[in-house]
Image (cartoon, rainbow, N blue to C red; front, top):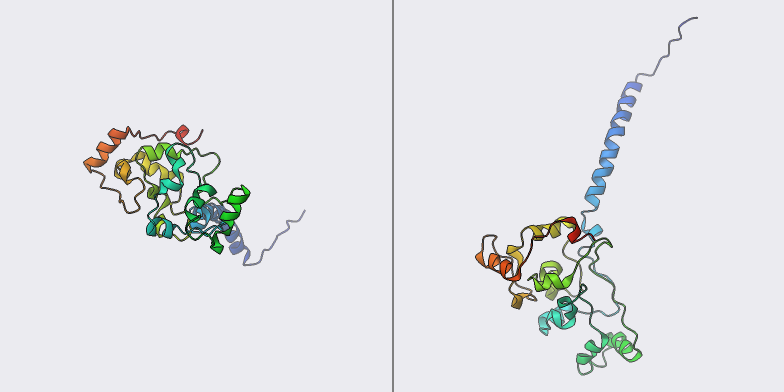
Length: 219
């Protein structure tokens, strides 16, 4: 039997090398792209404003009128959820202030009909993440530490990435971020230096524990 000699074109070696390189590079590129994607502001929903039933201006209420965060979100002191203000609470002011404003028509309609307003959630955690507002607030974690300068926002939007790594930064090193309770709702309070004795004193006073085990947040 005669040997059959197969002849390949001159470019076949180059094509084979490119194919081998693609087999290695494409999976790596795909994994890298996914790792970058989940860290983008778009994926984390940072800086994007959601449509709301009422165009509530935090700048006006917080900065201009001096309304404290806990006046509207008082559940943050005693509950897992911070809650949203009831229509009755809104009308406590707006029955006298701008009572005929067109922008407040959804509030008046909700008040008289008894049907609550449906606010669209801004800060969303995954279903497998457990977070309790009350334990953080009562241990000296301020509103702006997670929610940013709400007093400078026309409509509320997410500032912090809310990733596990971001949370663990504070859980591992709480001293710079723990505030006196009378500064909890301050929008201008700044984290202190790591070696500031006031931070250590507050951590001891509030009995802040550096919980980093998985079951702290994943239950």
